[in-house]
Length: 304
Image 1 (tube, rainbow, N blue to C red):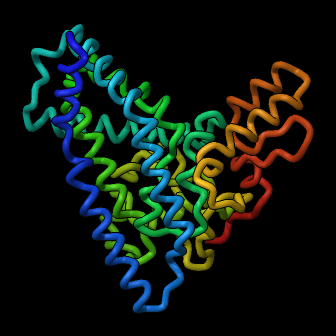
Image 2: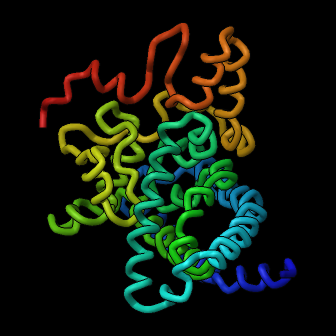
């Protein structure tokens, strides 16, 4: 197959292009509402960084996305189910759940493996949470993202179908990055990822660290023990446990890779060097263990 064929097929995934004007309009409306209500939700330099992360992501993601599409195509070709699974309504429904399940584990491991966290951390680096923050995508995570989806074409789902569902999932996630929406009806909060659940995910409070990794459905967090409810008595503090004090887009995109390199160099044992790469953020061979699960054990979270 010629590369032009794959490029042509990939260009049929148009949802992202359609969504961008909608996103920018929504951000503009949120800015206007925040200004009218005198809410401190946007800061110019911070929003600029978010926009630059979107630009960087688009550049970095192009080749990995193309190679992933090609890999999905050939994996689909050898699937014994490719003649069974087409684009029937039930196939779309099944793929929606499988994609969301895959996204949960991809997102969770981005928080629990430091090398992956280095690629994801730009998304959490803002101390603001607004629709503009949704554009502040993890840049480096685009290099490893699509490996998590490699099993789905083997189940008979074709590449374009997969990328369409992935785009729908990301489209949904844009809308949960806001403080403008409070808690929704209980049934919705029980099943779906909501602004309330996602505020928890972006919070640096110990109670909320590494919680609510959902894409569309919060049920995965409830099933696998990573769910935390937003508590009225503990407002979310956004950003990192140790915030970076820079608005330099390149530093925002790469600062954690540099930190890993510094830690690897100062560790003497090869086992410790590897732990700095593959253990959760916060692990140290010669200092306090600041991994989320360790910090949680030290704090009384029994109040509810």
